[in-house]
Length: 74
Image (cartoon, rainbow, N blue to C red; front, side, top):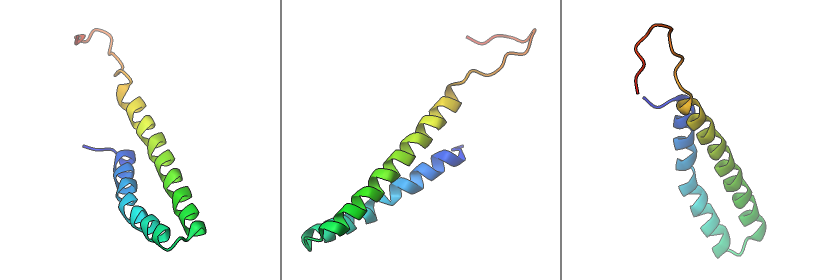
């Protein structure tokens, strides 16, 4: 079952398509300020998703605590 941060990453990545469309429209109209705004938003979105992905990986890679006297799996 995906965790909350992973679902936020997926939702964030789904925002890239509309952002790409806006960037293409701004570029076609030679709207340099508009292109800059979209680029900044995309960069921030990717950074946020990268941080969340790193957090998710770190949480998943931590070993489970061992209960004394329990069977150790290898």
